[in-house]
Length: 233
Image 1 (cartoon, helix red, strand yellow):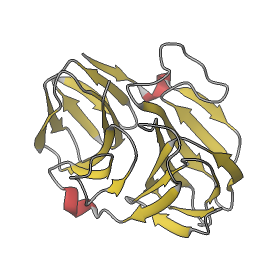
Image 2 (cartoon, helix red, strand yellow):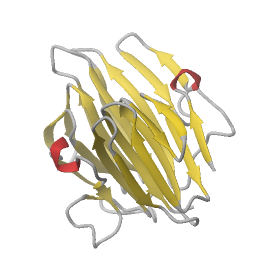
Image 3 (tube, one colour):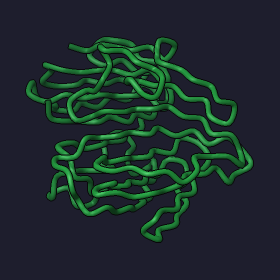
């Protein structure tokens, strides 16, 4: 099953400093049919105005991945970590037993991020934070694992979950395949461009919920940037 979820049909809230779009139930947006997808609990498409951001607040027992689409995000947390993650790069915060953090846009332009929350494989992990650069030319024509809960994928940022986050870039007309398996779930969001996935058209910022599908066949209708979570059921 491949269920395309158009961007215009996502949950939405505009707070002035934050323009948020919700693929799954979050904050005041509630849809009982969109609570999670396997271990994937949250996928927010956020635009943060210059000079604003999320003030210090707590989390626990959640794996929080931030994929920066445009601009940059500045992170600071109660473990003493500080960092700046640029467009195309990724940061991971394992909230574990508890962490307090802030995320700000200190740039002169709006920052666009995908905020992805994945349920951990168990409660009580030691909290941590990390960021890594993933050059787009390194994922040209193929999926690269950006964050992973599997020890053999050591080049990715580690998370404590039965899931991986992947990214790919495609030129117009280029294709790629991904072996998912019928026992796995995937959720794909197009950060840029337009694609066909197993014959269905997906446009920029649309979501795609995938289940009971052995193999994904993706073709770019224009230059495209893809982010996908592969998760256990």
